[in-house]
Image (tube, rainbow, N blue to C red; front, top):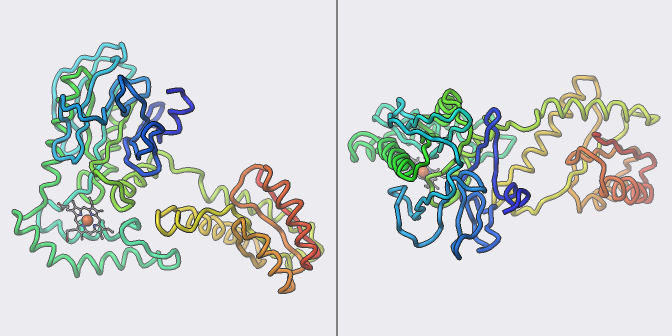
Length: 397
Ligand SMILES: C=CC1=C(C)c2cc3[nH]c(cc4nc(cc5[nH]c(cc1n2)c(C)c5CCC(=O)O)C(CCC(=O)O)=C4C)c(C)c3C=C
Ligand SMILES: [Fe+2]
């Protein structure tokens, strides 16, 4: 597999100077050979499909086959026997196995360059009846579990408090019936231990960590431990056999927010506000110009069926830009149109009597065919035809 292909299949996050790869059965990762949803990258070896979970060059491979050589993860619906392929050529010395308070099964390796970690993702559960209500609060406070429209997001926590209190008695009954708490932590720790041993037996020493989404050891605690241990390569293994935004998706979102928070929205809103403020001055009546955010569209099903955060993030971005402008005393009206409906919206605006319009292609940070040809030429022409006398466009370059 070449580097370009592997980067397509490997969602990576950076640990200071290190690799993080996610063994993720997210439906967006497809194996080019099987056309099936695949964790991370895949390739073939001796006619078998395999999934590399550590590196595509291959220090650890998980085989998606019927090969029953060694079961690694007891309790999972899938067999992922691990086979050693090309140990990375460095000296590993595995000395002992110990459990960190709750979050890591440690392996000591003498190599100073590479330290592999495996992070098991799971939901977590209350360990005592006393934990039940706060556990439920964490669960219902997750926007991937209770998905509120942006306008009502401020209700997430009060709602979580209310539902957790209402649900707690019923949940407590359930947990009381199974011994007074969830077995999830104990079982997941055992799975971590089994995985660690299996890797060690294959001469692939790795620390195995457990990251729970709603109870201890929380994902944040596990990541702190991983950083303390100076892990250089992290393989993320969701212990959910099927992908859901409410399970794997939610845990991955937490990891993403820790490892790659993305472009700081505040910074980008300030940059856009600077450009819009500058461009508005070109209009003879700047305060009358409608700020027309134009964004590339995605199919509605992405957002409504697949939970794509694109629309939410777009609205959040525009909200921040408008807030920034307001703080500078710029109170122009604004609207948002998604391509390919931009032309229809432009015609409607013209019909409504808009005369001045500043187009802001908010989903791009550089010029390209859509901004140069579609917005600058086609839409400008259409705007004029529709009665919009003055239009401009600004680009974040
Ligand atoms: C692995 C699949 C699971 C999906 C998908 C899922 C979605 C989901 N769950 C709730 C609400 C609750 N889940 C609760 C416990 C719980 N959920 C899963 C798995 C999935 N949930 C497990 C394994 C557990 C048990 C954890 C444990 O403590 O051992 C609970 C608490 C128990 C109860 O009161 O019934 C709630 C509540 C929602 C709303 C949801 C999707 C939107
Ligand atoms: Fe659940």
